[in-house]
Length: 70
Image (cartoon, rainbow, N blue to C red):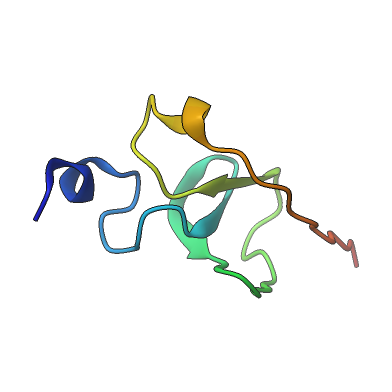
């Protein structure tokens, strides 16, 4: 295992996998390339890629998210 595998935000998931969090708290929600979920609690949804904190500066990609409120 490399240093990066121990340092990434969610160690059990691959680097650069799309993730989400409600109110920036755990547990993180794994989205991947085609994910959907219903939030278990109300709050602000944060989406991020699973990367090493402090190394998000070298990521660039475009994604489309659809957020629906019921």
